[in-house]
Amino acid sequence: MIYPLALDLAADGVPATVTCRVLGFSTQAFYKWKKQPVTQRDWDDAHLIHAARSIHGEDPAFGYRFIADELPDHGITAGENRVARLCSQERIWSVFFKKRGLNRKAGPAVHDDLVDRQFTAQTADELWLTDITEHRTDEGKLYPSAIKDVWSNRIVGYSINSRMKASLAVSALNNAVVQREAAGTLSLGPR
Image (cartoon, rainbow, N blue to C red; front, side, top):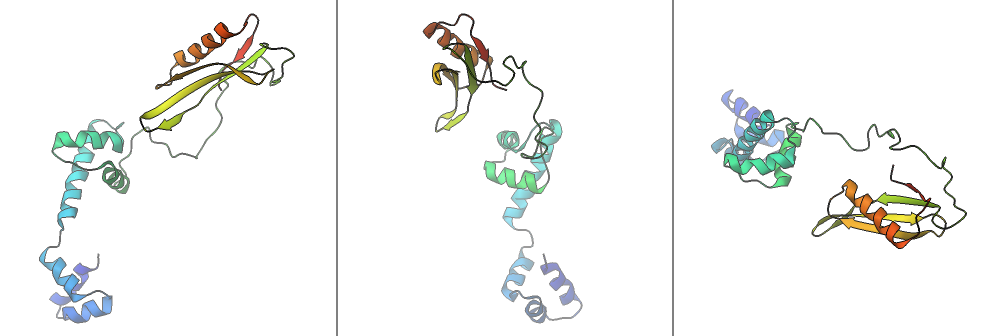
């Protein structure tokens, strides 16, 4: 902020109107700032930042969402976007924070590759593939899991849940087994 410089120059005898004209802002804005150097918004932001630092200090795993949830206990009401802006400005991040898109390396395989990357089948129900996807809805996230027969390229079993759990894939597999003859079928899950 450049207003304190104008205040210092005024103390040295330089008229405020000249300083404001040279520095490129209005004298009205300078005198308004001089009357109230700290705005109510700055004051409120300072209190919110202090509370956010306190909350984050108690549990460093807290990111801005958890901090926003805890603020009413400290007598402060603020929107999540405002908390996110101030936490980012003050570099208050969860210890588990990771920037997306950086250092994205494929991890080790979740299971052994039983088909040696050959995704073909000679008959129906010889090889099934499964995956779980995430879809955002107005009510929250929805996780569908589908089992696909490689030979017919059709969905042979599925399951949907509001939480991504192991039982989601197991339920889809059970659904496929009930509907199809599954003896000897090789099933590969998501990687």
